[in-house]
Image (cartoon, rainbow over all chains, first blue to last red; front, side, top):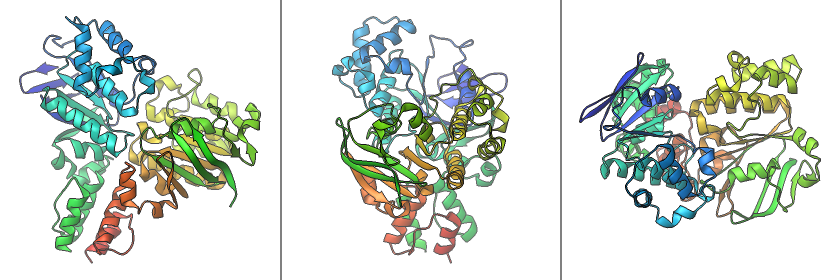
Length: 247
Length: 256
């Protein structure tokens, strides 16, 4: 991985891609493990300059059996983090993700699913990473919890200057939440660029068996088949306004 | 229509209060609801992993009156990646439970798992493990199949393909299927939909009818499937008359 102020370049012998620092980049892949292997490949990483934390789609079942403080100190020990004041770091990490210090004595298994995700982010923050990689962060969350997690991700980027990589096989989510996307299939990048521009390559993506976000697919059909004057939007209500004006 | 599973005034800790539902025999029923409303818990209770004092009737008999071995012949569950067969290949597991080649071929072909049946689970992706879980469970020939959270490691398209296969399989084999999910898209293959809210059943009925309650569903914290959301809003504006799930037909209807 090569680093400069603006970008992180991730590469191995087969695959190489660049993510903009302090931004949210989406990676669509049909094999997340391969991509994680490359991202997590630490051989050429300057540990002082760049730290990566990966948050999987589901919390580790071993950690899930712990109390919050046990999980926090387990993370500090296993990652051999040299912290001046571990207790303060634990408190600060919980505060950043919106949880008060009372949570330290809670059993993780008793927490709600979004609180568990908050704990995972708090665990990630203990090592003060530059890059937070989240695997399918919204999968199986309802509307309210999805919004809560999204606000937290934005906060990580905007207030704490974290570079965020969202890995998912759900193109609807990636379209909704990212401005830059890399599409990887069978360990090869098939396209990358601005999210909207990429998903507008309807025929190319379908030829490669990549699912098109539903809202894009509908707009694309209306524009190409009927020359409809509707724009690409992220919210269905905006499409309705366009349709109402032009039908 | 005969009920296969009946819960009446079901209560459980702080999660359920007087929940009443009836799952019809040989039908697919989806149970949805916001996170932490107790969907997985319900699957575990129906699978008898959690015993309660509630009266639950399964195939005309009270759940706690079944012998364990009889119950496991009747009810099986698929919870993604919860497996007990790490040491065997998928084929060995399938053959252990079912020696009928024709039946196994039907499952293997339907789930498109021919390439992985000689592998053990440690060589499989999450998607392949889930497919193997479904295949092995179907090979056991239960009367009731419980599936939790299928989308967790699958794409929407992959989930849809599996559900379409299960729908066909269920009709041929007279299987009752219960699916719990937060993704309402999955209900479009089902015969009946229950949505849990406020510790009980908030909405129920034929999925296409239930899903038209857009405001109520939004308040319950769930996202509507895109085409339903679009259809309902266009209908409210008087731009279409009927709910349309097909994008091509919707475009044709709007721009005649």
